[in-house]
Image (cartoon, rainbow, N blue to C red):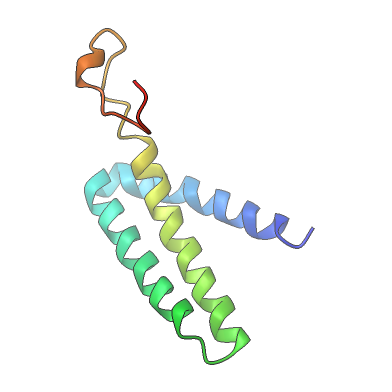
Length: 93
C-alpha cells in the first residue's frame, strides 16, 4: 500500500508531461527528462541521509514522467502498412 500513492502521482505527472511534450516537442521534453533523471540518479548514488535518498528518488520520478510520454509516442508516426520504417523494439518486429 505504500507505493500506490507514489505510482498514482507519477502517472498523473506523466499525463501533464505528455501535454508539455506536445507543446515543446518530443525531443526537447525527452532531453529535459533525461537531464532531470540523471541528476536524480547522481543524488541517489551519494545520499547523506534517508531523506536525501528519498528526495533523489522523487527527482528521478519527475524525470521519468518527462521521459515516458516522449518514448511512448515515438512509434506513433509509423503506419502499420509501412513496417520497414518502424524501429526495432526489443529485437522483435
